[in-house]
Length: 437
Length: 180
Image 1: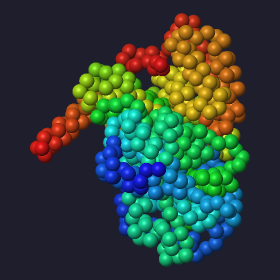
Image 2: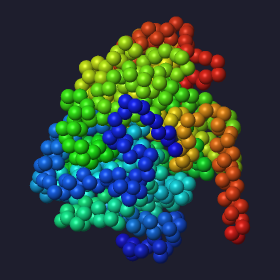
Image 3: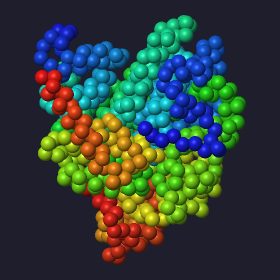
Image 4: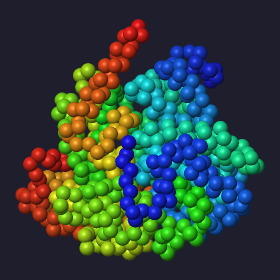
């Protein structure tokens, strides 16, 4: 069972029911569950969308788009059915927050999905979990069945005239399916390749119908926004970055864990206070602030507030909230190689710049790390990565290129140290060196 | 087209329980084909891998060609066309796990089992493979044995994990023997 952590600076909104037995529907109700959806049933769809927009809640999957705005793009009238899609395909390395949401509070996801349905006029929602999360799917399926039994799902929910159905779905192993249009393809029983945009899912999505697709954390936050009120929720964060967020702090820290902190919380404090600092008395070398696809930050760059805008200004991205902390015993070339190997493995192969680019970056970095690099390689790797940017249907190509470029720019010296017949300077006795096949 | 209840009436590669589950699964979605990926995964859970017979029956149940089934199945990393061990050990070596010693854990599994990457032990009990992020980054290094997570590992915990699963397998065989 994943360990739960806590820290006095935490503001528990999404995680407030973690560890409290809220997978059971009665317990969820005792803890204030399904109040928000009842409130929404008495209001207009426009009111719900306005609340969401005013709350400043931005997409927790990584892109950080305003949830309320996304919902407002769905046309009121549609010949085809509309759908709500909960993205629980959590796969961005460094990210494990949805894992805890489904483990401890699946009803919050269900309640959030119903509210989204009321807001846009959808009568059906899907909760898509990655295939590896089988035990979480089973927990979620029990929660859905309980909600049907109580009349919270189905026709005439909560005794109203409204209908909302939820279908759960498992993936079968694919990072790319976390991309919204690829997820729709997967849910339609196809290979998870992205669709070209426009049209955007809000107009043409699942089965061709208007679709709202939100990250599981975003959806689980929705009932809390309604309960607290948009202004109070927004006030917890920074301007344009409402509320709190689940930060997954992993890597070389003393107390790794998922901590819920206000948006804009200082990154240095997050590492040194909340997570207990660098383990084993070592020094900080680098931080990947928002999942493996976000550009790395140096120790002198971490005095920033962790919200979408401030991290963006620092040249990186808040992404999915996966803060990966790297100490000075780590080889950055090896870390870059492991990162690009992941993207090479996960590229769906649909767009050539991504399919070929990730593969070549992996090959070049493998050779480089093994001590067979030459001086031109450093510039060539950067040139290759830069030419992948913006040239693919979905952001996977960028996700692979951006961190690579940042590693090269910020740690050029370390790349150079691998040259001239000096294989990895960090090679240590008894520690296997990464060799990628 | 085949009669509606073909699966339960005629020969199926799946157990009656799974066949019944599939009958329900194809009704569950607005579009039948949405059942394809769950169906392949659940079939694999029971049969062990996507054999030709599994592919053929899934194709027939969804109403698409075997080629279409294979086209989709080859995309997803959890789906396999060859048997794995009864307990498939999946060691995450992605960044958060790597930083906390995943490769040492991965090596130890291979040493203890005497097999290389994706290798299956001669008794068919275990297989071991390196996998991408499994969403347990804050409890790294982590592995999955089939669908079970094991968190916060180090190489010294490896023998204990293996003996637990050996014990489980033994208990099961004994149970089956006494049933007979």
